Length: 185
Image (cartoon, rainbow, N blue to C red):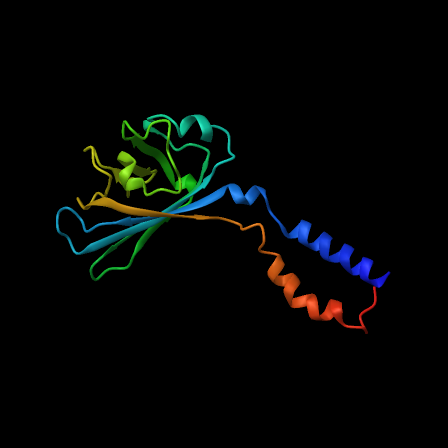
C-alpha cells in the first residue's frame, strides 16, 4: 500500500511539474557582426516568441515588412556597447513598437524558428519607442542606431523555453527520502 501511495505522489509531482504551454516559448539570441562603419562597438540581443499566441501561424508565414510589434513576441532585448562606455540595454516588448520582418521569397510560407534567421530574411530589425534603436532602410539584416552604427545580423540561435521535464530534477533529489523506510505517508 505504501508503494502505491508513493507511486501516486511521484506521478502527481511529475504531471504537475511539466509545463506543456511553456514548450511553445522560444528564445532567439541574435549575434550581430561588426558595425558596417567600422566603429569599435558591439550589439547583442534576443527576443522571446510564443508560437501558440494569436496570429503567429498566419503572421509568421508572410512578409510583414514594417509593422507594429506583434503580440507573439513577448520580449525583446538589445544591448549596445561602445568602446570605453557602459552598455545601453533596451528591454521589454513594451519598449519596442515596430518590427521589420522581410522574409526572402523562398522562405515565405516555410519560416522555421529553429533555423538561422540570416538565411531566411532580407530584412529584420526592431525600432524602440525611444528611438535608441531604429531599423536600417537597406535590404540587409541589420539594426541601425542613432550613432550611425549599423550592425548586420550574422546569426541566430533558438532555444526552447520552459522544458517540460524541469521538475523531474527536484523529484530526483527527493527520491532517496521517498524510498526511506522511516518516511510515512
